[in-house]
Amino acid sequence: MKPDDMQLQLIDDVDRRLIQATQGGLPLVPRPYHRLAEQMDLSAVEVMTRLQRMLTSGIIRRIGVVPNHYALGYRVNGMTVWDVPDAQIDELGQQVGALEFVSHCYRRRRYPPKWPYNLFAMVHGQTTAQVEAQIQIIAQVLGHYNCGHQVLYSTRILKKTGLRI
Image 1: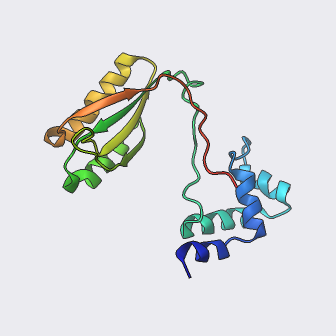
Image 2 (image 1 turned 90 degrees about the vertical axis):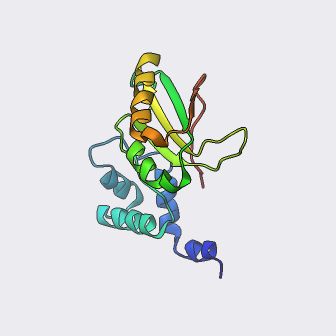
């Protein structure tokens, strides 16, 4: 049996309904899991237990906040791409990802010679100067491991959604 088949067996009809009910976001109320429980005729404990089980097993990857940066006043968005030694990327990525202004940070494959970058970090600011200052902080964190970087600024807002079932 393939690993994907094993995961599919872990999802029952209630799990599937719970995924469908949450894939567009949690209810914006003080107790979102209780609201889901009411809507699905379940207990809040069962909702939370099922979500935790699906997180632990890898059926769902995360439950997190996805802020609308534009609505919060952050109009300048830059995907910074860095060329760092592969041997240090895990440690460096954790340090960069821990910076409060980095919304996400991850490793990507290089495509030399045109694309030597393997560490990506998204930053947001209210002004270009603010984003440039954040980029300088990342450069300081990377220190002598920084073998080059670029910044790819957003030019328009794209619709962002995850996989829907």
